[in-house]
Image 1 (cartoon, rainbow, N blue to C red):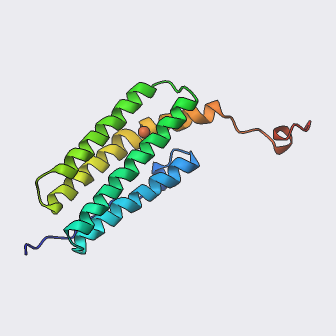
Image 2 (tube, rainbow, N blue to C red; image 1 turned 135 degrees about the vertical axis):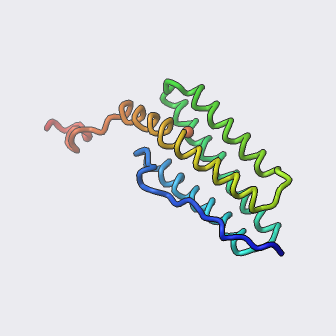
Image 3 (cartoon, protein in one colour; image 1 turned 180 degrees about the vertical axis):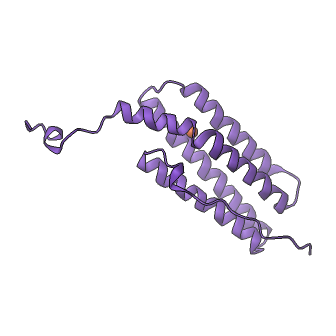
Length: 152
Ligand SMILES: [Fe+2]
Protein backbone atom coordinates (compact mmCIF):
# COMPACT_ATOMS: atom_id res chain seq x y z
CA UNK A 1 0.00 0.00 0.00
CA UNK A 2 1.47 3.41 -0.94
CA UNK A 3 2.29 5.78 1.87
CA UNK A 4 1.52 9.47 1.86
CA UNK A 5 1.58 12.39 4.24
CA UNK A 6 -1.72 13.05 6.01
CA UNK A 7 -3.91 15.33 3.94
CA UNK A 8 -4.39 18.67 5.70
CA UNK A 9 -7.92 19.86 6.23
CA UNK A 10 -9.22 23.41 6.06
CA UNK A 11 -10.65 24.81 9.25
CA UNK A 12 -13.49 27.25 9.63
CA UNK A 13 -12.53 30.77 10.68
CA UNK A 14 -14.95 33.35 12.01
CA UNK A 15 -13.56 35.70 9.34
CA UNK A 16 -15.50 33.63 6.83
CA UNK A 17 -18.83 34.54 8.43
CA UNK A 18 -21.16 36.75 6.40
CA UNK A 19 -23.27 37.84 9.40
CA UNK A 20 -26.27 35.66 8.56
CA UNK A 21 -26.44 33.30 11.49
CA UNK A 22 -28.25 30.38 9.85
CA UNK A 23 -25.98 30.39 6.80
CA UNK A 24 -22.84 30.93 8.89
CA UNK A 25 -23.67 28.01 11.17
CA UNK A 26 -24.32 25.82 8.17
CA UNK A 27 -21.11 26.98 6.43
CA UNK A 28 -19.18 26.15 9.58
CA UNK A 29 -20.70 22.67 9.68
CA UNK A 30 -19.81 22.32 5.98
CA UNK A 31 -16.17 22.59 7.01
CA UNK A 32 -16.97 19.80 9.46
CA UNK A 33 -18.22 17.68 6.54
CA UNK A 34 -15.00 18.42 4.66
CA UNK A 35 -12.97 17.44 7.71
CA UNK A 36 -14.99 14.25 8.05
CA UNK A 37 -14.15 13.31 4.46
CA UNK A 38 -10.45 14.14 4.81
CA UNK A 39 -10.19 12.19 8.07
CA UNK A 40 -11.84 9.17 6.47
CA UNK A 41 -8.98 9.10 3.95
CA UNK A 42 -6.23 9.79 6.49
CA UNK A 43 -7.64 7.06 8.73
CA UNK A 44 -8.05 4.69 5.76
CA UNK A 45 -11.64 3.91 6.57
CA UNK A 46 -12.20 2.03 3.32
CA UNK A 47 -13.36 2.97 -0.17
CA UNK A 48 -17.08 2.76 0.47
CA UNK A 49 -16.98 4.83 3.66
CA UNK A 50 -14.81 7.45 1.95
CA UNK A 51 -17.15 7.61 -1.06
CA UNK A 52 -20.13 8.06 1.24
CA UNK A 53 -18.38 10.89 3.08
CA UNK A 54 -17.69 12.64 -0.23
CA UNK A 55 -21.31 12.19 -1.33
CA UNK A 56 -22.47 13.61 2.00
CA UNK A 57 -20.15 16.60 1.57
CA UNK A 58 -21.47 17.22 -1.95
CA UNK A 59 -25.09 16.99 -0.78
CA UNK A 60 -24.31 19.39 2.07
CA UNK A 61 -22.72 21.96 -0.24
CA UNK A 62 -25.64 21.76 -2.69
CA UNK A 63 -28.12 22.21 0.16
CA UNK A 64 -26.13 25.22 1.40
CA UNK A 65 -26.31 26.80 -2.06
CA UNK A 66 -30.07 26.14 -2.25
CA UNK A 67 -30.63 27.76 1.15
CA UNK A 68 -28.73 30.83 0.01
CA UNK A 69 -30.58 31.01 -3.27
CA UNK A 70 -33.93 30.75 -1.49
CA UNK A 71 -32.99 33.75 0.64
CA UNK A 72 -31.81 35.66 -2.43
CA UNK A 73 -35.12 34.98 -4.14
CA UNK A 74 -37.04 36.20 -1.07
CA UNK A 75 -35.49 39.64 -1.28
CA UNK A 76 -35.02 39.66 -5.07
CA UNK A 77 -31.35 40.41 -4.44
CA UNK A 78 -29.33 42.21 -7.10
CA UNK A 79 -26.74 39.97 -8.72
CA UNK A 80 -28.72 36.81 -8.02
CA UNK A 81 -28.21 35.36 -11.51
CA UNK A 82 -24.42 35.78 -11.41
CA UNK A 83 -24.36 34.37 -7.87
CA UNK A 84 -26.39 31.33 -8.95
CA UNK A 85 -24.04 30.76 -11.88
CA UNK A 86 -21.07 30.67 -9.51
CA UNK A 87 -22.88 28.09 -7.35
CA UNK A 88 -23.64 26.02 -10.44
CA UNK A 89 -19.99 26.14 -11.53
CA UNK A 90 -18.83 24.97 -8.07
CA UNK A 91 -21.43 22.20 -8.08
CA UNK A 92 -20.28 21.03 -11.52
CA UNK A 93 -16.63 21.08 -10.50
CA UNK A 94 -17.39 19.14 -7.33
CA UNK A 95 -19.30 16.51 -9.29
CA UNK A 96 -16.41 16.21 -11.74
CA UNK A 97 -14.00 15.73 -8.83
CA UNK A 98 -16.23 13.03 -7.33
CA UNK A 99 -16.21 11.22 -10.68
CA UNK A 100 -12.44 11.51 -11.29
CA UNK A 101 -10.69 8.25 -12.04
CA UNK A 102 -7.85 9.03 -9.68
CA UNK A 103 -6.76 7.91 -6.26
CA UNK A 104 -8.66 9.24 -3.29
CA UNK A 105 -5.60 11.28 -2.29
CA UNK A 106 -5.52 13.07 -5.66
CA UNK A 107 -9.28 13.60 -5.48
CA UNK A 108 -8.98 15.07 -1.97
CA UNK A 109 -6.27 17.51 -3.06
CA UNK A 110 -8.42 18.63 -5.99
CA UNK A 111 -11.29 19.13 -3.58
CA UNK A 112 -9.12 21.21 -1.25
CA UNK A 113 -8.15 23.44 -4.19
CA UNK A 114 -11.85 23.84 -5.00
CA UNK A 115 -12.63 24.72 -1.37
CA UNK A 116 -9.84 27.31 -1.24
CA UNK A 117 -11.19 28.84 -4.45
CA UNK A 118 -14.69 28.87 -2.99
CA UNK A 119 -13.47 30.55 0.22
CA UNK A 120 -11.30 33.19 -1.45
CA UNK A 121 -13.41 33.87 -4.53
CA UNK A 122 -16.96 33.31 -3.34
CA UNK A 123 -17.59 32.90 0.38
CA UNK A 124 -15.60 35.95 1.45
CA UNK A 125 -16.59 38.04 -1.59
CA UNK A 126 -19.91 37.19 -3.21
CA UNK A 127 -21.57 35.74 -0.10
CA UNK A 128 -20.35 38.63 2.02
CA UNK A 129 -21.89 41.11 -0.44
CA UNK A 130 -25.12 39.17 -0.13
CA UNK A 131 -24.89 39.31 3.68
CA UNK A 132 -24.57 43.11 3.52
CA UNK A 133 -27.52 43.30 1.15
CA UNK A 134 -29.70 41.25 3.48
CA UNK A 135 -28.65 43.41 6.44
CA UNK A 136 -29.65 46.53 4.51
CA UNK A 137 -32.97 44.97 3.51
CA UNK A 138 -33.84 43.85 7.01
CA UNK A 139 -32.56 46.62 9.29
CA UNK A 140 -32.31 45.75 12.95
CA UNK A 141 -34.74 47.92 14.97
CA UNK A 142 -32.83 50.58 16.86
CA UNK A 143 -34.50 49.67 20.14
CA UNK A 144 -36.63 46.93 21.62
CA UNK A 145 -39.36 49.46 22.39
CA UNK A 146 -39.50 50.45 18.74
CA UNK A 147 -39.60 46.82 17.67
CA UNK A 148 -42.61 46.23 19.94
CA UNK A 149 -44.40 49.29 18.62
CA UNK A 150 -44.04 51.07 21.95
CA UNK A 151 -43.09 54.75 21.61
CA UNK A 152 -39.55 55.31 22.86
FE1 LIG B 1 -23.02 31.86 -2.45
